[in-house]
Length: 86
Image: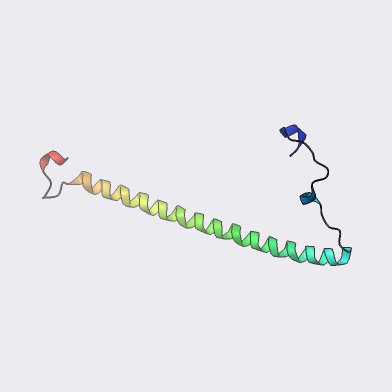
């Protein structure tokens, strides 16, 4: 946590230490991991966009249905309803 956020900087936190590996092995492994993560992140974003689009279409359809049903209710009262229902 940074000092400006009210925390303190600890220089000897063993969990924050990184292990040094040979550069070629690290860069190959790191590159593969980054590519894999970038692909997974893109898939996740695409799924979320698709889900949001489907929900928007469904919400529009349901709003239209509600409006139509309200219009039908306001146009005529069914035979079983009492006159006081309106």
